[in-house]
Picture 1 (cartoon, rainbow over the protein chains, first blue to last red):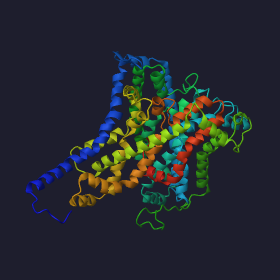
Picture 2 (spheres, each protein chain N blue to C red; picture 1 turned 120 degrees about the vertical axis):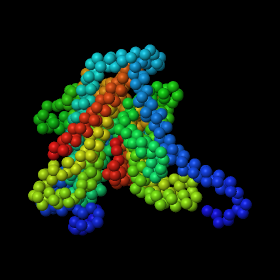
Picture 3 (spheres, rainbow over the protein chains, first blue to last red; picture 1 turned 180 degrees about the vertical axis):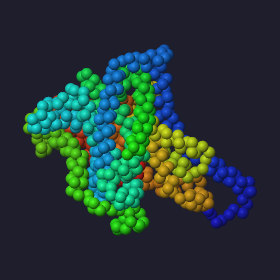
Picture 4 (cartoon, rainbow over the protein chains, first blue to last red; picture 1 turned 90 degrees about the vertical axis):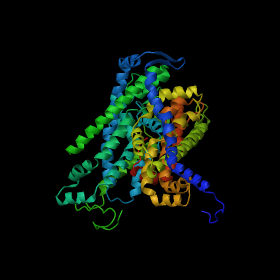
Length: 313
Length: 293
């Protein structure tokens, strides 16, 4: 502060500046958090809530809001076979990707947790796919999984195996799409698990070794149970993301409809087709809400299941 | 990590293994090498196709070495009328930069308040922020699209930027970081010196937040750059971001995959450069608790 004090500084003025300062302390915190809350309310929360409003109305792109129709949109969606096909595909792709991804990520993390040479190099190496956009990943893999001239079928042919219909059949197409998801996310997941592993006190392992437990036994008796919170976190986040999968199935072929007979059409593709294909926003909003509910339920189920599995081991 | 073998030194003692030693054997390195090759191969493959010509993928015998056509294929991508590649690149840079900057600014502001200031309702509001991190806001696309259409913003970059200007994860991340990286003494010292709150934020909190802010910017940039669903819905075909441009390239050039793959390589190069420059920060960011999304 300045060392020169004004000789005729009035008492009232000091009081005023103090009031100002007290006000500053009181109001500032709210000012600083308000941009986040206001903007999140407008761009995140409001659309989600408003989705419920749209879903109980007749609503199309041209005419806008129409009559109130109650649960007609939901009834239509739930009695529409494509919705159930999309639900089946979404879960199938999710399981085929999530389960191997977590197992492989655990393995990678366990190796990275050892005392490696060139630690940073290996960690960066497994993370490389993360900077490739899902769209780019899909175009690359869609080519490798080509039914006629694809790399994979060519290699299988060299081994004397008949070509697989990666695009024409249900399960192979799910495997191909799950492979894309895992290509991009396995290394990322491995690093999250690695961070969890490094927080495990090392003397647990010392004690286990003295008791004569081998590497495998240590992994199942110490590492997995200790990783429970990290595992729950990984599983829940991959559920939230995985059930909304859109980019990969949309670009797996040029038509973008999820296959000629919906072999790999997912819920988000179904939602997109209702909203921006058939211009029926009421029905699209109903699908969005249903998917929201499904994600919440599956997320909670995951937490329960992971807890019991980790406890059992 | 410490370098000695003692069990009682400060920091994290190394795990001592009697059975297979501390260093993983050839099996561990072999496994990691396989993972690494798996990470790199698809990119190599796309370059292989992208440097060939239309006949490359229609051969029964696999070609393992790049051809010489990459530059001409890349030129074809850049010149393609259907795609507008330069514009897409510019759009992606603008959107990712603006979104990263605003997420960092608002997250640091809110994080500072949550971490270091006392106010009524703080804990409740922070719990609310953490709860919203798990909300799949993508599912609000229908009303968001209706709103953007009515505001005459559909098709413009604002439609992509506005829904992404704040991030619950960002607020949580900065709160976590500032609560341990910024001592109360510093703030009090600034206050005693007569600095106003905003001045304290600007000259004390912001410099302390820099490392975490840089990481948040990095992750937000990558997430925005690679985002497809919402830009695909709201942008028109003349004014795309890179992922949207790639999807157009695929639907226009699927007869000549070498062009499509050249586009894939072109659109990935910027992030590959970022990866080379800042890869180690990405690794440490994830290990400090970065979240998908």
